[in-house]
Structures are given as C-alpha cells and as structure tokens.
Amino acid sequence: ATAFTVQAQTVTKTFNAPGSITVDGSGNYSVTLPSVNFAAADFTPGNTIVSDVNVSISWAKTDGSCAAPGVGASFHGETSFRVNGPTGNQVILVQPATYTGNATISTVTTAFNQGSPIVGGATPTSGTFGPNNGNLESIMITGYSITVTAIADTTPPVITCPADLTIECDESTLPANTGTATATDDTDPVPVITFTDLDFPISGNNYLRVRTWTATDSAGNAAMCDQFIT
Image (cartoon, rainbow, N blue to C red):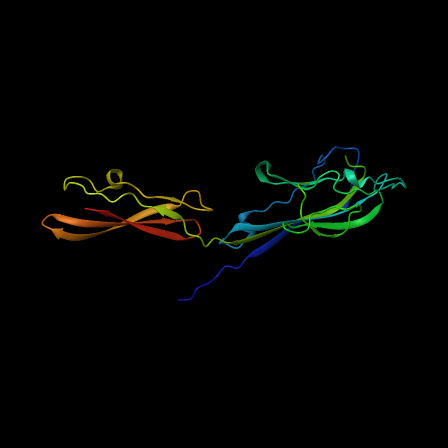
C-alpha cells in the first residue's frame, strides 16, 4: 500500500484598486473595500483546517487627497485598518494612534502576520508586523491581499462507547435499548457513527456480543471503541 500525505496549501486573493482610493473625513474603520472570498473549492480536498491567515495592504498617506495632495501634516495617528471576516468576525490590524508622525509618505506595503513585532512608530514603513488590535485625514489605498494557509485534517474524532451491560435473552440488543456511542470532532460537527457486532458463545443460550462502534469525520479519520453486551 502507498500512503499519501496532503501538504499544507497557501491561497492568496488580491483586490487591486483601478486607481488610488482616497479615504478622507471619515471615522475609524468607516470605509469598506470590495471583499475577497475564499471557498472550500479553493483548496485541495483534505485541507480543511485553516492554520494561518496573513493580510497585506498597500497604501500611502498625505495631506489633501490622492488627486490633490497638500503640504500640511498627514496625521498618521488617524490611520486605522480592520479586517471584516465571516459572520461578523472582525480583526483590528491598526488601531488609531498606532502611528504618531505627520510626514507625508509614498506607497508602503504593510503586511500583518500573527507573531511578528507589533506594528507602530512615528512613520509607517513597509514590512511585516503583528496586528495591534487595530478619523482618517487622507489615506490612499492601492490594493490589499489576504493569504490563507490550510492543512489536512488528520485528527480522528473522540468517541465514547455506551456502558457495558447484561440483558435478558428476550430483551432487544438494538442500540435503542443498549445505548449508542457519541463522538466529537475538531472540524466535523456531526461525525458519522456506525457499529458492527461479533458474537461469542459462552454457555447454553448465553453469548457475549462485542459491539464495535466507529466514528468517522468528513475527512475520513476514524476512531473505534468496543461495548460488551452479555
């Protein structure tokens, strides 16, 4: 037999603005850009666990606007970035007052990766930073990208067998009478539970039934346990 291992897979999706988008005179996290969407079909079958998410934003900051930049202070302390994820899941990348300077900057690319040094300082620079739990003067966004890394689910469910028990010969051995196994899984909310029976004669009309329960998740990982019925 040959074993195959599904490798971690990285998918990047990018929004490129047709021109610089000026954000001015608005509150914190107030302008929503077009979204990028990820679906299960973007990843190799088996890569069902998201292990990492990175965000990269290209932007510049000036007094005035993108079309008519001024010569005054750029007020970097007003800059704020946030990612709006699915089902209202929001991650703040840059919160107001993260930067403290006022100098005009040309386009920088700020990447955010969990575990990197926290973003901050007087003047924004290109680089990779950690989000800091992220009223804009004038910020010009030229594009952004989001990178999602997914890995294979290789962890089987956790299965719990019903208790061993002794019943009378005329009692039903169906699970409705003898109990049903339960299971939980990290990624599959409803693992499939099945069972098989194997009988061993003891004496007379008595026998031992070994019921093997199996829980299988959507990735094909399985866990088993035995219940003994006499």
